[in-house]
Image (cartoon, rainbow, N blue to C red):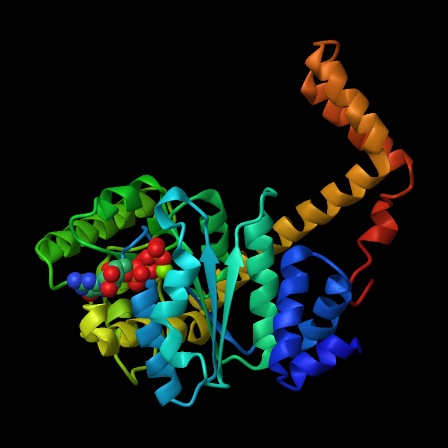
Amino acid sequence: MHPIAEKVLARDTRATARACRLADDRAGDHAAILKDLFPHTGRAWVLGVTGNPGAGKSTLTDRLISVFRKQDRRVAVVAIDPTSPFTGGAILGDRIRMQAHFGDPDVFIRSLATRGALGGLSRSAVDIARVLDAWGADVVLVETVGVGQDELEITRMAHTTLVVVAPGMGDEVQAIKAGILECADVFAVNKADRDGADAAVRDLELMIALGGEVASASGRARGHSAAAHHARAVAAAPGGSPTEGPWEPAIARTVATRNEGVAALVDRLEGHRAWLFGTEAGAARREERLREAMHVQLRDALTDAAVAVLGPALDAAVHAVARREIDPYTASERLVEAFRSTGAFTPGGAVAVGDGP
Ligand SMILES: Nc1nc2c(ncn2[C@@H]2O[C@H](COP(=O)(O)OP(=O)(O)OP(=O)(O)O)[C@@H](O)[C@H]2O)c(=O)[nH]1
Ligand SMILES: [Mg+2]
């Protein structure tokens, strides 16, 4: 086993930070380390926390850390700095807001800057969450701003996605626009000490109801049905056993700064976890997510392999398309043909993964 992987499993903080950095940079032995760690992952509950800049994600995350620590769970936080004009100082802000937990050996906080490369951020976040899972985190909180493509990919990797909404910020509308409903398992209407919280809750309830109807109409019952309501009520009940049926997003009101509503929020989150891990519908959801993740992994791996093999041919194709000598569709088809003919791609052999025939 790679020495860094060994140290991560021994809960060495410095080696864990190092492994995170290597995974983020895709540098050094990152692939070997991740492969060695993978068999030791799968225990952690990955909880995504997303929402608009300033909605209160970090303040709420800090409260959640406290709740989980009281339950003697190990907590890891991946705070993603989008380096956007709105949140230029997010890393510093996050550090300040979570500093109470910095000396705690059972809390690991890691900030992650956005990479330029397409999909780089979500790739890094997935890998770092795996490192922290192997480190022994019971809960991995992934805080990410907003609703861009990267963020949507990150919410797909989370088991449970918490969307933090603050009243009067236009969040609600934003949420609908970005299709965040697809990803939201629980909404926190934070800053409930401010005007507009009731309206935000109503908007979300309406949105969830409409989302359910649209989904039912298209055959993917995600329901506003009585059964779904029942499932939600039972699943969200503390100590109650989850019931089969689709998950309907739950809503909690919080005032993160005053630590109000946090227990109820945790109940909703735990309700989703119970549903995800305790029902057939939840198992189906997990398999669907895993399949999506495999597709992304495969796409990346295939692209890397093809680019490595086709380098000059790819450049030539780009130039030819730019000069309108060939259309991009035909060019892509020819590149795929060329890649196949190199033998780098051998359908029979290359897919022989797992138990075999
Ligand atoms: N009134 C009120 N203010 C809050 C509440 N929660 C957070 N805030 C304040 O809102 C501001 C932003 O909080 P953060 O927790 O940094 O928000 P964030 O979503 O993490 O922000 P970014 O990471 O920059 O996107 C801070 O000044 C908090 O003190 C709340 O429930 N009520
Ligand atoms: Mg923050």
